[in-house]
Image (cartoon, rainbow over all chains, first blue to last red; front, side, top):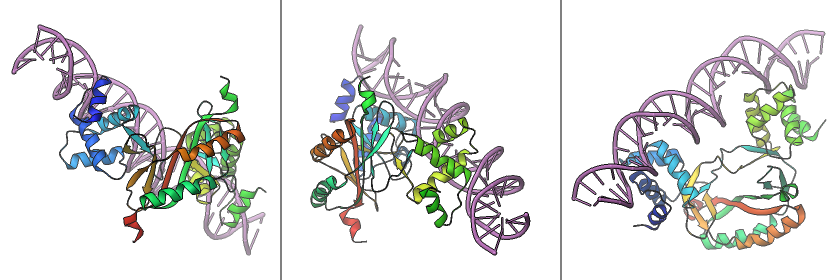
Length: 139
Length: 139
DNA sequence: CCCTTATTGATAAGTTTTTTCAATAATGAG
DNA sequence: CTCATTATTGAAAAAACTTATCAATAAGGG
């Protein structure tokens, strides 16, 4: 039995066929998969697997820390006006207020390291910090 | 005339009431706004502003670099299985393949600086790098 | 102050995600 | 190993979100 099945079990959830499929497909893929993509990949292999279940399973896995959600280029939702030169945001988890912060230079070192380790050429990045703004810290 | 109106004009676009509203609302808000939120905020103030226009305007503004799209916690789409201890991803823009990379310690310094500068308390972060994987670099 | 034409917005179509609920299957008990 | 309980599934439908269509409107040059 796999590690994650253990974990699922001990958290009081059942180890089911569909859940096994979702995990298997994710593990086999090198790229992140969308719910739709997972569903189709499963279909292609005769998996017993409904789209609704894929959504539910991913939510559960995420809650248990078994999968990560990554942001594929397009698709998301909040917008902020740009202030020139800066690119990163710090968003308050409580009230939603956001500030931009300077200094992507600090990433340069990290990026160089990663490039050396992975062989990838890094062209861009997405960095956001989450926390509490001064006003919300007292609450 | 504002800066951005100038820019719009010179790029060959017209400066319209709805576009002015979208920009005004964004500038007045401290938090990132979703298209829906913008639409409602406009409505509340009798703005002449349709939801469809909000979408189009945001797309245009983003293209011109006037606004940034940020990822609000929930909502997005790709999933990857977790490998223990690591939290960051590097995604190939060409083939979509992704690798996790270690070393969030490198962010510690940056985060400490930001906390000092902004007064926010940083609780979490989202860091993703985009680039080309070894295989796709030759193409 | 017109005329041209980009832009708007209502409606409708297309997607994506969530809810509902009867049928199914996983697990523990016997 | 079998049964009973109950979490889980999946089809269908509802809800939410985003994009396309197109006649009416308004921006901005002449």
